Image (cartoon, rainbow, N blue to C red; front, top):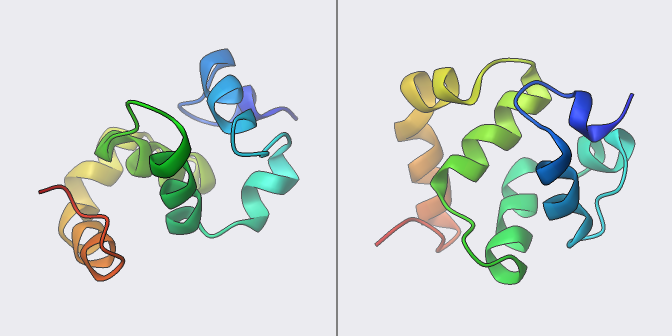
Length: 87
């Protein structure tokens, strides 16, 4: 299985994740989703809130919009604790 095979991901997702040295599903599953989001925010221009939803969705095999709809508050609190919440 490749990264592009995960729910909500495609070739562009693989390219973006490669920029932070995530090159396999094993790499992707081994890193905390919030740590990965932090690395993306620091290294990939244009990384926004939908990215964390997509990361969590891909890990849990659910659509990112479902993550955004059902877990937004919980995610924003965690990002705020990390100093990464949107201003």
